[in-house]
Amino acid sequence: NAGVTQTPKFRVLKTGQSMTLLCAQDMNHEYMYWYRQDPGMGLRLIHYSVGEGTTAKGEVPDGYNVSRLKKQNFLLGLESAAPSQTSVYFCASSFPGRGGEQFFGPGTRLTVL
Amino acid sequence: QKEVEQDPGPLSVPEGAIVSLNCTYSNSAFQYFMWYRQYSRKGPELLMYTYSSGNKEDGRFTAQVDKSSKYISLFIRDSQPSDSATYLCAIPRNAGNNRKLIWGLGTSLAVNP
Image (tube, rainbow over all chains, first blue to last red; front, side):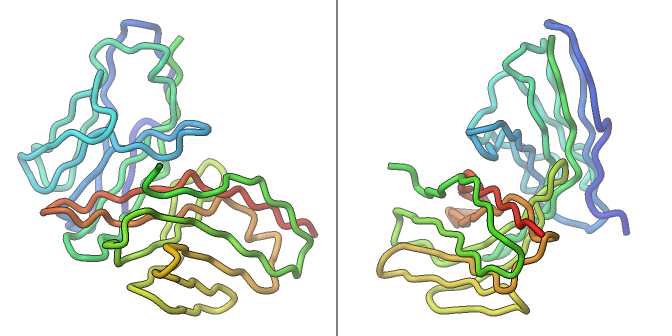
């Protein structure tokens, strides 16, 4: 049981390049989330999904796109990277329910030059 | 006013000290309260979870909720160097069918041997 895994762990991009971050979970969770974490800003929700084939915007969705083609995978895309997208990206997943404990992946450190 | 406020610290204590970490929140309708722990360069993990008011104890950790003051606390007894981490409070917004969490900024704790 690997939990939540993220690929890649580190990446350096040049401004304008594109990339996709992959999140996979093996806990059969319905909900999945993408966050970014920046010093002084805390965890901010980018996009989330409440089920296969569905996605929704979070607090800071601009410049990002997502897809949830399979229940276990949630992809985050940057079409044209900007230095402001330098951050640590976390994927999380959870079951629906009142508590909604979220299980996090190890993170992806992205630097955009 | 932010929905959840948390003093980012940093907090530095000697080994064996009692640590008090706190958050305040603005919405009296909130009912579930969580504390996550995040070690350096790792994803957050759920530490404790309480519902409504009162205390919940788990080993050296006690979570306390005071709904009348809209104040939540995490106490760590006999703190250890392994407790050095960032502690984040999180509250489910519980609106509709999503399970978005409102996050505090996190308090950085260092326990010195």
